[in-house]
Length: 115
Image (cartoon, rainbow, N blue to C red; front, side, top):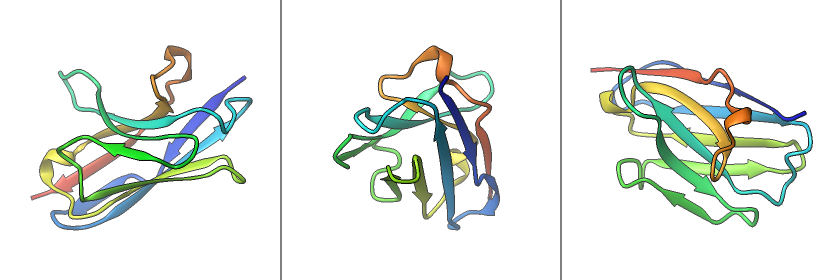
């Protein structure tokens, strides 16, 4: 049974940095692309970034150049390094496969960027 557990969120000032982690347990495998998504109250969950099985990354335009997505398959972990954070980055962040699998959504981790 696959379980994804996000951590690393918190409160940070504008311009600050945070690194989110996602621990992957179960047989999700290293062959899958993984992604980060985020959601704010009253809005649809949106895609943030994807990393392919070979490490190729893609980013939403709003985070391009500020966020770095990485994976450590030996540890079954993926990470999202977030730099130059803005108030509009405030959201609950989730990891999942790309495309996402509904049964894999975790509890997410809250990121709050103060202005």
